[in-house]
Amino acid sequence: MSIHINWDSKYLLGIEQIDDQHRYFANLINRLSDEMNQSDDENYKVGLFAELAAYAKFHFISEENFMLKARYPELQAHRRHHLQLIDALSSKLGLVQVEGTQKRIDDMLSFLRDWFLTHTAGEDRRFAEYEDKVRHWQDVSGG
Ligand SMILES: [Fe+2]
Image 1 (cartoon, rainbow, N blue to C red):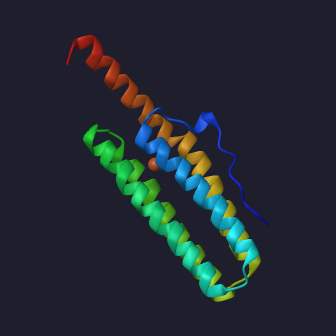
Image 2: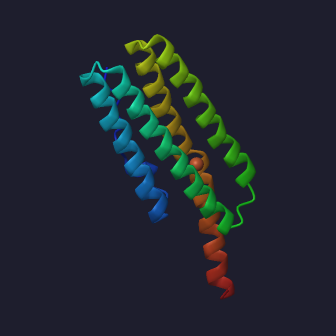
């Protein structure tokens, strides 16, 4: 089973750097899902998951830095969401490594896709709305 994310403008936050990373992340999930379906080399599949996890970590740090710079009041809660995903990914990766079944791989990929879509359209959008308000306030106050 190939897991695919259909990119949609509803996932755009209006923050170019974060939008670029989200698009890259979605493409990466799609591409690696295809690769995993076409290969029966376990080591290669574990390597692909490592690539996904590394990009997720990079993206989270980058997004959190944006929030730090913006003094986002909900940063700590947001960071907890990111940590939860990293934890869930590593325990699911453990299952993939132990069992190595296609079912575990599919579970992990669909979990990742669902998480990505709800997080981007939910928690990340809350931050974008905050950013928007701050920018608007700076415009009207001339600051
Ligand atoms: Fe996020």
